Image (cartoon, rainbow, N blue to C red; front, top):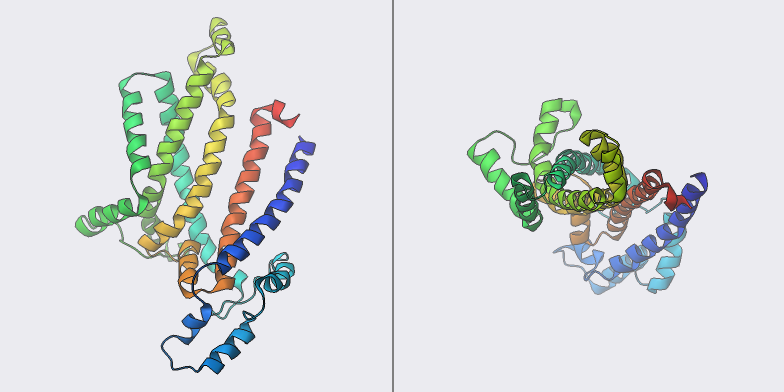
Length: 314
């Protein structure tokens, strides 16, 4: 197990390097320039624009910029934001907890509902619950999260007045003030994820339940609960873990949309603002830290494979 984990961690290093390289070049390919955002509607001469461009180092070839940029970011230094006038790591540290709360709570809701529903649908295949879960998962996966977010705001915030429509409060303002502003975003983000987990859990369980060792376990007189939870579910967890890791990564990406719909001051909203302003350092730092979390989760999923299926280690 240790050797397997070590191999996966070592393979993590070139992935980080490739990720940083792609982030840099794709960011520079975004149309527009930070100079326009800095200048705004002010009357500025061409000489002044050239001077600002030189100060930012944007007049040099892109490969030269990359070679100067890479050694700094490899140690976590993305520089300072053009607009926030703070180091990138400080701005990200302020915003990231909001995104993390949104993503983690969405995954808790997704797993708590999706896995049991998928398992039950597989056991009662062809029954009413099975058909209902298929319909629910299809609707959830087809429904755009931003549209669902607006719908939830209209119903629960505007019409019923049960929950705040937007904004965020930290836990320092009280648990309910904090959680009440996360309920609607979590529901909007988790619905599609629940549909995906339900479908994968159901398919994996149906495949495993048809194996010979499940028939043998039943023939030994084991209870159905023990057969399902100990024998079937553990063997199906390899595929289920894959989709859980995928939904977590999708949730991080989806936070960009959800945070803008509900005005949550998270990393997704920060990346959107940085993209509009062409704040390269902020955009690169924000995307990288989101990607880094997704890669770490992917690494954890790889290690979980070895736990659920020891043959993978070899």
